[in-house]
Length: 393
Image (cartoon, rainbow, N blue to C red; front, side, top):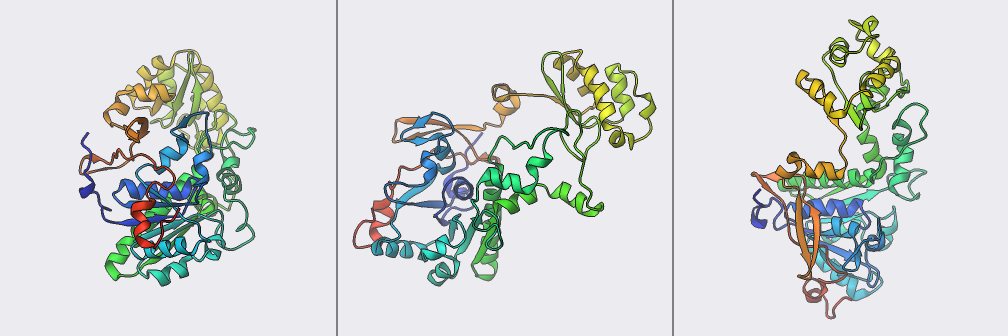
């Protein structure tokens, strides 16, 4: 696929000052950078974003870990000691030129440093100020660590996931961080559109907790309007607490099959050659009321043939189903290849990194970028030096 030139990206010319670290805030900055914004990452001298040293595996790439490279590519890095008057003056001058500021410290931390919303608004009234906390700026949880697993735990997601009888089950991803980062990016973009209409900046706030609640808005809306009854997870191959049979993941003779929607239970049973479900035909409520009994019989039958055999029978009949792919299988698929989802970028002209592109296409072109994550403070000279009598280090 073609790559959209920088000059045609919708945020080309926009300046973002990013004080955030770890995953949620930097992910927001990454989304803006891929859309064309110039994102300048502010880090502590000698230490930098702690995410530089948060290793997911034993893979180190040019002095930083793979996670840091993934979420901080396409950005610049400057270092500033907030206790140093010259560094603070340089940051104030930089914020005067900015369109957006991002931060994700615990409530009160950035304010004590003199870069809270009111402080920054006094510097630049037109700025859009984006903030991510763990649980909001007030209340009994505001000072608790805003960490992904803990936000998942408090949101109900761990309790909701899995089959009845399973222990609480976290997702295999930092989903709270990623959803909060994407939510903040959405809010910042909306505030920028608003500024274009009325000329005013804005404070955009979200939290890991709010992002996790919003992630569950579909099922929570049901809960709030059906007498606040708690859903019962399926005891057999649970995949969604509110959906009836056959929804779930089933073992086959050589693997697994995901089974979602079907025109009717009778159609599915006949395609599978399955007897014993006739009593439930014509009763849509049975798919919920007798969910576990139905899924038990389905599981026994699906285990008798291979995944490929079942797909050949079910897909032509418009039964919604899928094989279960690992990453190797997914990457080998034609669907994955045709979307051109991977890119290779370089750091210091020699270090090659394989990365994923953003999930958007604009004017039929991707938003790939060859710019790698910055080394700590690599942009001090051309960003901060002109703004202060001495180079901020």
